[in-house]
Image 1: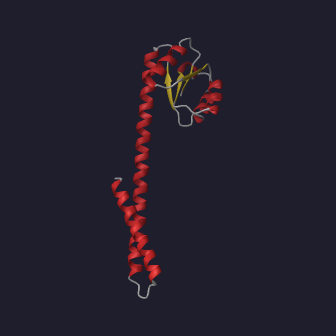
Image 2 (image 1 turned 45 degrees about the vertical axis):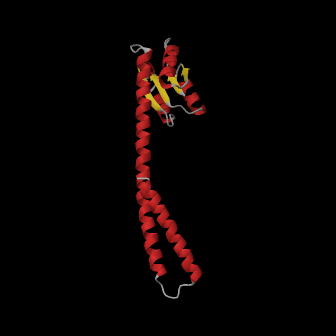
Image 3 (image 1 turned 180 degrees about the horizontal axis):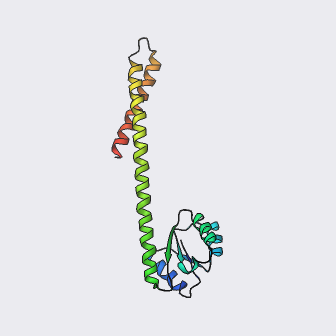
Length: 162
């Protein structure tokens, strides 16, 4: 869902255009106070802010930005922009957000993969060394072999995910 903050008479036209462009319902509120109330109630994908409200209060705007959660802010000038332009701007911002999130997930996965590989290498080395110890009881040897096999499967799974 999107949130459009505007006191413009064109707000409903923009909400309709946003629905068509983003395939998400858009709630329209007239001011920053109402927007903060809505942001406390639910999550939004995009928060479209009419630039005419930016002069209202810098403090209120700071509070609004802190309460966006995962929503992407989109600043538009409804006095000079048509509804289709506002919708395109919001759609572009949502696409950028999707790309940034995908890149962040990829980076996090690569980091975890690297950490797990190092740990798995250690497990494999120590298990191999443990298996060469003289007089190791058979049950302990069997468990270490299972541990080594599990670590090798995990390593193969990590390699397949790259």
